[in-house]
Structures are given as C-alpha cells and as structure tokens.
Amino acid sequence: MNHLLSISDLTRADIEQLHRLTDSFAEVSRRSIPKVPALRGKNVVWLFYEDSTRTRLSFEQAAKRLSADTMTFSVGSSSVKKGESLRDTVLTIEAMGVDGIVVRHASAGVPWQIAQWLEDRVSIVNAGDGWHEHPTQALLDSYTIRDERGALDGMHIGIVGDVKHSRVARSDVLAYTALGAEVTLIAPPTLLPSSLEGWPVTVRHDLDTVLPSLDVVYLLRMQKERMTEHLVPSLREYTARYGLTSRRVDALRDDALVMHPGPMNRGVEISAEVADLPRSVIIDQVRNGVATRMAVLYLLLGQGVDKVLGAEVSELPVVLDPDPSGSGPGNQAQGSNHPGQASPTAGVRA
Ligand code: CP
Image (cartoon, rainbow, N blue to C red; front, top):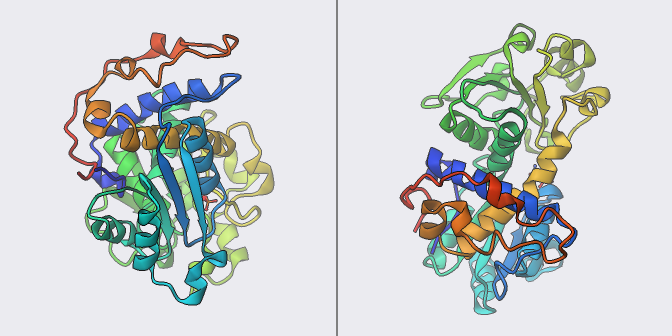
C-alpha cells in the first residue's frame, strides 16, 4: 500500500513521471466527456479538518473524472463535535470500506499517524498538514512552470513572504530544487523559520534587488490565522516592502511568471491588478491541480506504484483510453508521450 505524504519521498524521476501522467490527464480533462474508468470501484474519502476550496474541490473533480466513488467528511457536521477522537474517526471510516484517504489537518504529521494506525491498509494523501507540507500543491506548481517554460532546470524562483507558516513553501522548495531550479526565499527575518539548516536555498530580505533576476515570483499568502504574535509592524508596511505591485512588476523580466497558491489577499501580498495580468498563472495553477490530483490518485489507487513509476505512460492503457465521444482530441496523448524513466518505488512509502 502506498501513500503520498511528502515531496521528500519522491525522486526527480518520480516527479517527472507524475508530470507526464499529468499531461495525459490534462488531455482527458479537455475532452467533451472528461472521464475515464481508471478508478471504477475505488472509494476515496476527503478528511478535511481545515478549510479548503481548491484542494478539496480539485481532488473531488479528479476522483470523479477517474470514476471513483467518494465520501466527504465535514468536521462541523460530524461526531468530532461530540468529542470523537481522530483515531476513532479514522477507524470508523476504514470500517466502511475505503481505498484512499485525502487528509488535511492543522497538526503536522497527522497523515503519517493515520498511515500508522491503518497499518498501510489504506492509501493516505497529505493535502496539507500544519506548517509542514502540501505535496500536491508542489506537484501542480512545478507542473505549471514546466507547462509554461518547458523545464525548471536553471530557473531562478523567488518565494516571497510568510515562509515561516507555509507548508506550500516547504514542499515547493523540495520540488523546485529536485527539478534543478535555484530558489531564493525573500522575507523579513520574522517570517522565516527559526532555522534554515539543510534548506537548499538562498535568503534575501530586499525584494526590489532580487526581482530583476527572477524567472518566477511565487507569492505566499499572509497567514493571519497562524500568526499569534505580531511578526510584521502592520500589513500596510508589509505590502510596502514585499507586496507585488504594478511598479514592482515593471522590474521583472518580460517572461517572468507570477504565481500564488491561493487564496490570495488582494492588496496585501499581491495587488488586484497584478493578480489578473497575463503573466499571472494563478488560475492555470488551479486548472492544473485537477490533472495533477488525477495523476496522484491514479498512481496510488490505480495500476500500482511499481507499474506507474517504472512504466512508459503509453503502457498505462486506462490513461490513454480514446475519447469515447469521438469529438475531442482523442488519443492525442499517445503522440506526446516520453519514455518513462524507470525508478524504484523509493519515495512513495510502501
Ligand atoms: N492552495 C490551497 O491549498 O488552497 P485551499 O486552501 O483553498 O485548498
């Protein structure tokens, strides 16, 4: 049984294979009937103890496009309100018969804990655990850059803002550097983790001097809900030094991309006009999130990690089912397949 808990569990070859699978599922998503029977008979539950729009809905959309059955757990209307523990909740859900649990929780490590309790009988996907990791966000972010620019090798990516509280930053740093990019964190010292030992990054505190050298400027949300102390004097002062305004965009190279994981605080870390510029690929990130999560669910619940990571995408018949409507691009993905780079299952916990 396999899980996706951390980007650090994936090799570069694993991430590249997931990106190629995402290409195939993006093609499925463009069909007039965007559905394949890859996960027919599989049951996936969304176990979200924290709010979400993009992650939960795109996992739901992904599962439907793969013909999986789904169950939704909402904390607010569940027996958690009556004091039921996380462990009892998880065991209860397992008893109903599930193949996968997609979990978001405010506490770091919960996805690992659940995998242990269930003794690997159910695949667990980390949809965000505290400040720790958000691996599918990093997969869709790196896919979006690759989709726009071909590859991440040699790119300079600046991650700006509240790194301290950001699980997205932690997963993105791992994915971007695994794929050959150089990452600079740009933030006031108070919004950086207390130790960056082992992080393969450069740190800068002055956004204006770094902007001209960036291929991608990736803005993080100011996470007001996680700030228990005053880490910046005021949001206005934060915006003055670190907000991506139209004036700052003028300092970027013509082909530099603007990214944000969402939800955005327009007028804080990004101005409303900048969020809607053609170079802002924030909506593309959301769109790519569906195909990315189809690839992840297929990897874990479909053919099996050994077969998927070690195979050429064209060897995975369900992905390449022709368009049943006959009106879409059909089996176009076959023409764009690259040879798979064989890799061990190392990385996706067995
Ligand atoms: N990026 C992200 O995780 O968004 P949601 O909180 O809406 O899922």
